[in-house]
Amino acid sequence: YCNTYSTAGTKAGDWYLPSLTELTLLSSSYAVVNGKLTALVGKVTIEEAGYWSSSEYGYNSAWIQIPSSGDTDFNYKYSSSRVRPVLAF
Image (tube, rainbow, N blue to C red; front, top):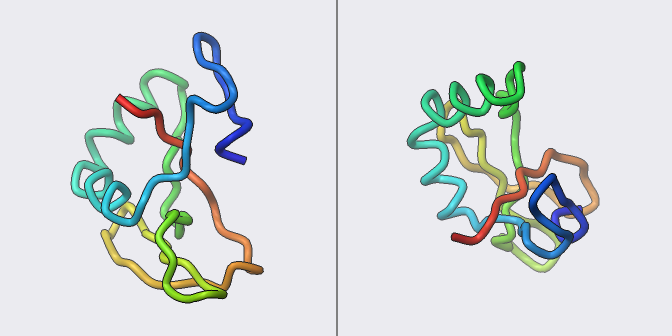
């Protein structure tokens, strides 16, 4: 999904699935980031749910991050969770 995601001014391939470390950094500024994104698009854009990271926990699981609390856990790769594409900068 992240590989094919695009927006006005970006193209497919510009976005990627962040690592657990990157999601943890995002979580540390959850209120600020979510407030700014909400102001831009007019609605909450980072839900209080688990988001996939690109960091594997094991061969059949990967780490997820809950931005509002900063909690981490793992989920099986065949399970569904949200993704938060990010841009390299």
